[in-house]
Length: 175
Image 1 (tube, rainbow, N blue to C red):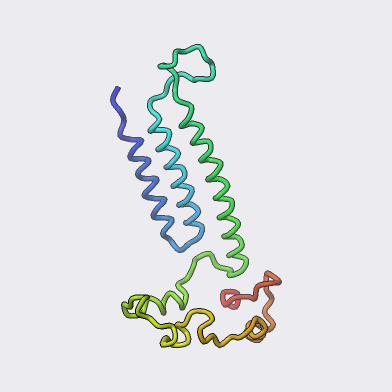
Image 2: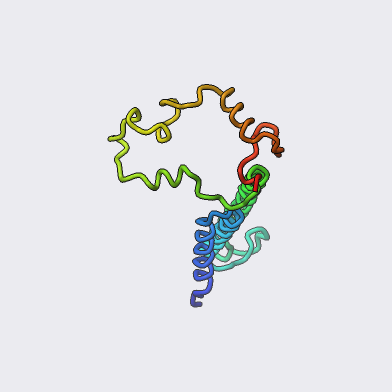
């Protein structure tokens, strides 16, 4: 019996599509990529377990004629774990949607500022010599307490209702 090339191509395609979707900034696509990676791994485990044989549950076949139940148990465990992590990711995406009202993660100002820096070694940087916006927390911060932060947020977002009592509305809610 000759092995088929279709199953490795399908597994490779699922891994490729899963990694491609994981690298997107859309959170829904990240979840779909994670699901595809889980399914590709399950197919890989089953295809690596060897050809199909008789079920070991019935007990009427010789040991050489039975299939190994371990890969099947691993796949069932992987399905449960993938389902649990997917449910957790969906809850995080839902929470992010309630707070920001958009599903795509934008490039924030911190990303732009770090990307615009010249190549510097982290060991050569003295935090006292950095401009105030580049200093780590606790090094020349302009905000001294949580009360100042709350007052600034209340002033900035006055009159804008928030979805959550503990979080202020974000700029995405204004547009």
